[in-house]
Image 1 (cartoon, rainbow, N blue to C red):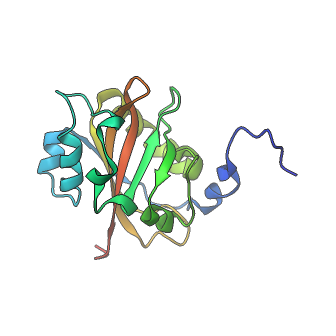
Image 2: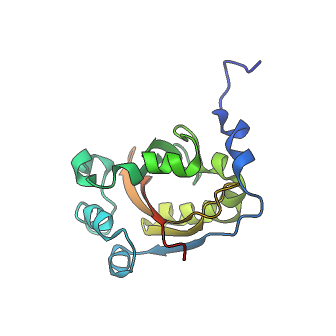
Length: 181
């Protein structure tokens, strides 16, 4: 029987079993707001919402956003927070398309708990660089879960100030590539 005093959520029992050990690495980009807006991505309107709320080169604060700012994106958004010094963000809110893509709600879990192999290979350094610089991240590739590798996706990672930190969290936008190329 599981202890009621567990410190880690159920991810160690569920999600690592779903991560495909043979999944291809993701293609990761980090760029300025100007580069992200000029890039050919499906996130231009989401990036513009984010860019309109930043001051100078600093990311906007989470409180600078209203629910209505994300009209049309709600099901494709995920909000994460860095709860300590590690670059492993914890999922706080995830939209329906995120849940459908992953097969379960991951709220309360860290990215490294959900995809530990991918996190160690690539995402630790990627998230650390975003956290250190305040740049925008873009992740492109196939879903790293068993039986979901046929799904091609793009994820934009927009840094936000939270908890007194310059980058205390991320707003992730999801795009599923239905064309299959």
